[in-house]
Image (cartoon, rainbow, N blue to C red; front, side, top):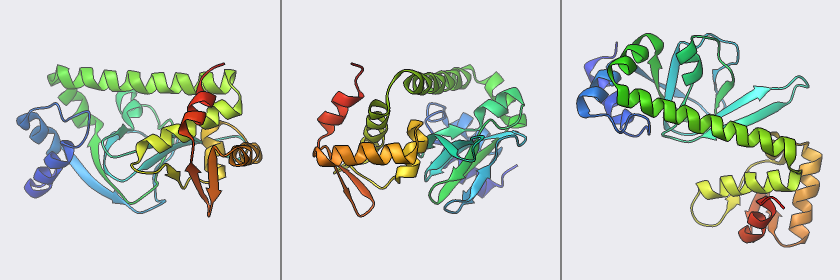
Length: 229
């Protein structure tokens, strides 16, 4: 259990998490009293696929990368989760091992919620339980969309959607620092094919490749590429 000071800090952190910001003050205090803040450095592993999953984590600060190792030694990037998101909820709910790796992409501050505390809390709070179900449904829909994209659409469409997704998360000019290897792991392709596609778009003036940055010059052209023919 958290100390009084930690619990108060945890309550304030919970207010930033989308799943729990609809709870009232008493409910947040109750949940925060059972939570444990943890910090992770850049690139530090948080959990690995196959490990016991006794907790879920709310991201308070930073970005967490969710990924899967492939049989060929490559990594499949499933998502980069920003502050306000949750992860680890599947293993927490079904009691089975972790289904993916989680790594701190930046310096991260998390709030760890143990299964033995969360399940009774959800039983006592139907609104929070319903919101968690909605949260899981939204994540399943995104996963289904990604699977369909890889199965039915070509690389230019998948890559355009990836670039648009990440450029929409920031403010100001759409300038992305994702490497070509990362873009390949996100779009289900090889780095070589991603390189060819990006260089073609560079020649066409859709984007600019400069000093390891990808600068989106014509987002409307990417949006046209991202739409099914």
